[in-house]
Length: 566
View 1 (cartoon, rainbow, N blue to C red):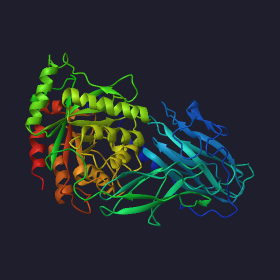
View 2: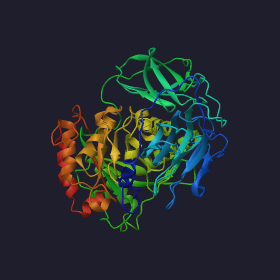
View 3: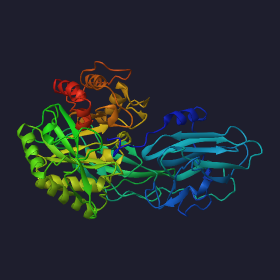
View 4: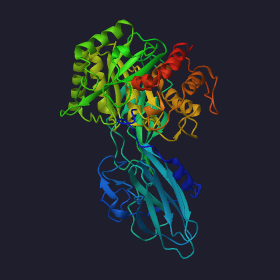
C-alpha cells in the first residue's frame, strides 16, 4: 500500500505480450490407446534427473506439488529466464500432445527441433496449478525433440509438475503410463453460507484433477484439493462426493458428506456498519505522509485499519506497539481514548496484520491458535473492533480459516473481519486468499482488494485489463461478486494519491464511476457487468495519511459518493 513499506513487484506485461505474439497454439487432439508419456522423470520424483536447467536456476521441491512428492521450481535471474529442458525420443511423422501443470510466475512450455513447426504456449502469474497444453508433429527424419519450460526475465519463480509428451512410443524409455487414481479420502465440509458449501479433501497420488458431485451430479472440476459449490438454496442439506482423475480415467467416488447451507440474510460479521462503507488505513509510522492521530481521521471513514501489527518470534503470533516517537509523541493513552471516541461516533477501528514487511505464517494448528490468541489480546488491550488480514507472503486457507474462526469465537458476532488481498490473490476461487474468504464468509465483513501495484490482470470475462481504468476495477470485482462473495463483502481498494502506491492510482472520479457501474450499470467502460450489485460495500484507500497529504481530496470525493449509493 505505502510506496516505501508496501511496494510490490509490478508485472511487466508488455514484454510478455510481445513474446506471446510469436507463440503458436495448436488444437489439442485425443491420444490413441497405444500412446505413452515419452517424458522422463515427468513428475520430478527423482529430483532433476533427466532435466537440464540454465544457470543452475532449477531445483526439485517437495511442496507445493501438483501430484506425487516432487515438483520443479525454477527462478529467473538477470538475463536468465530459468529454462529447464530434456531431450525426448520420438517417432518421425508422428503427432504428440505436450502438457504440464504450472504455478507461480510467468511460465512457458514448448518443443523445439520438431522438424516441422516448433510450438510453445504460456500463462501469466497463476496462484493455483494450471495446465498448459499444445501439440506438435515431427518431421520425416526427426527422432528426438527438446521439450522445455522457462519463466520470464525479472519475474517470480515458476513451479512445474506432471509434464507429459503423449504420442507414439519413441523408444526413449519414458515414465510408465498412469493408472486410474484411488478415490479421495478425508472429504469434509470446511465452510457454509446461505448459498454455498466449501469442501476440502486429501490429495491422491497420481491425480491431476478432481470432480465434485452434488446429490449425484457433477457440478465442477478443480485441480486442487478444495472447492466451493455456489448457487445453493438457503437452509438446505446437500450431499457431496469427490472423484480423482488423470489421463487414465476417473476414480470411484469418495465417501459422501452432507453440507447444510445457513439461513438467508446478509452474510458476514461486523456488528452495526452502514450499508455502504469507506475503509482507510492509518499509518503507525512516519514515511513522509502527513502524521495523524486517530482523531485526525476524517469522518468520511467508517472503518479505520491501524497499520500494522508486528510478527513476533512465536509462530503465528502478533503484537502491536504504538510508534509514539515517530508520531510526534502520540501516547498510548491518547491513542486508546481516540479509538473510543471514534467508536462512540459510530466508527470501527481495527488492527491490520501484515503489509509488505509483515511476514506472519499461520501454517499449522499451533500457529493458528497463537494467531487467534494474540490478535484477541491486542484487541482487548487497545479496544480494537476486529482485524484486517493483509498478508502478502502467502496464506494457508486451512489454518488461517481455523485461526479466524477461533478469533470469532472469542470476540463474538460484533467482530469486524476485513481482508486486503492483492489482485493475483483473487483471480481464482482456488487461490488461498479467495478460499479463505469463502471459508469464513459467514463472519467476513469485507474484502477490499488492492487494485494497484498490479499490472494487467484477467477480468471475469477472460479478457486482460490494465490497471488504472474503470474496466480494471469492475471486471476484476466481478470475479469476487460472481465467485461466491456477497456484494456487501466486496470493496474497491485504491491509493489516495499518486504517492500512495508505486502504480495504479486513479482519480476519485474513476473510483466513483466504477462504483456506479457495479451498483447501477452507469458510467461503465467497455466492460459492463451482467447485473447490478446494489449492496456493494464501498471503497478502501491506502492511506488516510496520504489522503491528508493531498488535502483529503480522495475522501472528500469518494466518501459522500459511497454513502449515497443505493
